[in-house]
Amino acid sequence: MCLARIYGKKKNQEEDVLICDSIANIIPEGEKIRLLDIFGDEIIVEGTLVSMDLERSTVKIALAD
Image 1 (cartoon, one colour):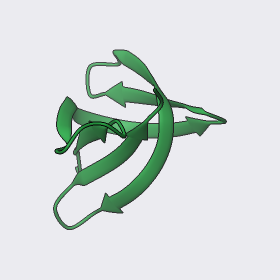
Image 2 (tube, one colour; image 1 turned 120 degrees about the vertical axis):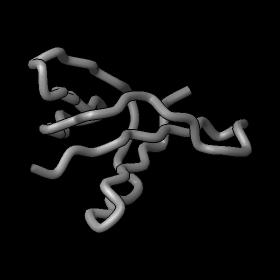
Image 3 (cartoon, helix red, strand yellow; image 1 turned 30 degrees about the vertical axis):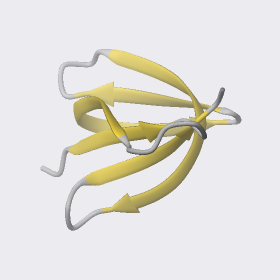
């Protein structure tokens, strides 16, 4: 099983920050992204996908202001 760590960054931030861990499902929905972890818990963030590194199991999101 491949689980992802989700990192986000706003325009005024210098570094990506960890938003959540152990994400099993990523569902883009317009300007929102729904993240589901292995326990079925849901997190919704506003932003756009920037990159997905499947080898390192990391996803980067540009967060909305």
